[in-house]
Length: 178
Image (cartoon, rainbow, N blue to C red):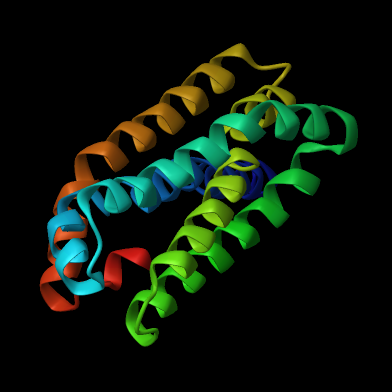
């Protein structure tokens, strides 16, 4: 291989890794909280219904906004939708995390943070798949292998979530929000 092909392959590898990290992080962002719900209920002083709303608020926001994000990404471009969505998911996580850490009655702010995370997830995770199609439209083999890696990272997130959530919560109960 020539030097130019090696550089292109390295760029492609980092591109695939960055795209695969999106579903991994978004899955972790929602599912890591499941094992800490009983602790969350005690620490925040909420009911089991309210703790389930912390998970549900993320999912509902994402479900309703995925079609909007898809339309916007088709109209304005994938990166224009993905990058602000990732930032919004980060801001939501920071709001939920700091609220659970620093505020005496954090439930409202945790819900706001989780809704922002869900909105961010709607504009990030589902847009990755068409982005792969756009990037590798002339190479079916690369498209297939990249999509497989992305789905593997999503599945890995589902397996890793309860473990990582429990480990983080063992250190400080609110760390999974971050």
